[in-house]
Every structure is written in C-alpha cells, then in structure tokens.
Image (tube, rainbow, N blue to C red):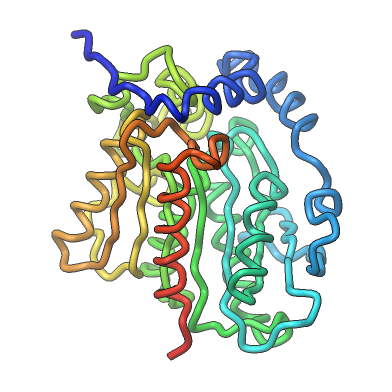
Length: 324
C-alpha cells in the first residue's frame, strides 16, 4: 500500500539537497558500505581542525573495552580554562551502525561544552557488519563506565552525566541507558535521543512514507539493521540493548529527550518510544518537528524550525544539567 509522504518544510529543502549531495552520493547497500566509509572519511575533518581556535582542550584516552574485546578510544573535550565538578555530555556518533567515527558530530559537542561549561566525551565504537551486535552498544557502555570511574580526574560531576546521540547514536544512547539500568551501572542524569534509530523491524508508516526518498530512507535503514543484526534481525533473538524498541520494560530510565522530524522514517518509532516511557510513569519530552527531514537542524541551521529545535534541546539540557 502506497503511503504519501509528509511534505518537507520549504525552508528546509535547500539543506536537504545539500545533505543528499554531500552525504548520500553512494546508495548505502551491503556491497557499498566500504565505499560509503571511504567517502565519509573525506568529509569528517580531524578533531583539531574541527575545534579550530575555540577555547577547548582535546585529549585522547585508550580505555578498556568490554570483557574479551579490544580497547576503545575516547576523545575528551574540556574548556581550556579547566573543569571541576562539571556536567558531562557522553556523545555517541551516528552513521547507521556502519559508518562514521568519534569526530562525526564533534563540532556540535564542542559548542555544547563551551555553552554549559561541560566536559564532552565522544566514543569510538566498533562498526557493523565486521562487528555485529552487541559490539557497538557494549563498547559505548564500557566507555561510559570508564568515564564515571575517572570522573574526578576528568573534572566531571558523576551525578550530571547525560548520554547523547543522533540517528544510530541515538539508538545506541538508548541502549546504553538500558544497560546502565539493568547492570546497576552509572546513574545517568538524562538521555538525549535525536532522531534515534530504535527499531529493526522497519515496518512503521513513516518508514514506508520515505521508501526511496529523503535523507536516510527505508532502504538505508534495511542495510544498517541487516549489517548489525544479521540473521537475528526481525526475530526475538535480537538483543533489546541493540534494538531498544524491543525492550519490553522501559521503566526506571533516566529522563529522556526525544526529537525527530515529521518528514522522516524514524518519526513513528521515536513517538512510540516516548509513549512507552510515559506508560511506565517515566519522564520523556518529545518533539516532532513539522516538515523536518532526518538531521534537518544540522544541514538547515538558519531555518525557523531548526532554530526552534536547537533552542528547545538546549532548554532541556539546561534543566537536566543544572546543579542540585
């Protein structure tokens, strides 16, 4: 059954065209993952270049990975003036579970570090299909555990840590929050899930509305989930920590911020995740932005809806990160 898509906000359409030209030149399919990675490597600058002359200090830390797995690398961003008892933003990059690195999204993390006087941590996790689930979410959780164990030397207040991520990073952030709950791990102050990739089934109305059109369409989503889950995809064998929408119990989670465009595939699963948190008595703040494509605020920053989305996200962070 054909489902007409929600139209894009006209003010966003030039940014969407730029997104597609820059990021999605090569259709993402199983046999083009490596080509897409090579292309991504040309559009993600080194950390020092991203930071530019902004007053931050960047350090690299190689830390223990999950038991029996390789070490992982964290990039830590601190205000140049130093930090003590600062809030922390633990950031997980996007890329459909198969693309990107810890510098993807670092520009925005640096902005937030300076705005909030925070410490930012960006984690390098193993990509699929070479490293199927639960490698990525376990790597991200291991990095969080190390961060909390070393909060004092990093200048972090361990009571004010928010795990954040967009797209695949949003799905992994949700998975990390679930692992922290179920392992009696770090007590997170919040989870910020931007246009999160939560459900491997790819069957919602919104996924069908953007089948072959837009930024990160239904076909790309199939590629990412197939790579991550292999034969477990679509079955009860899929780990709910890798596929948060499959978690039957969403109670006892830290406050969640969820935002998504109305004109993208993740609209319905993001909305459903918020509804299910509320059904347990949990805290969730959901924003569905009219006419927004996947990742619209980053590629159309001057549009009115983008400015509203950024201001609303920052408002939530201010409320979550305030001391006491």
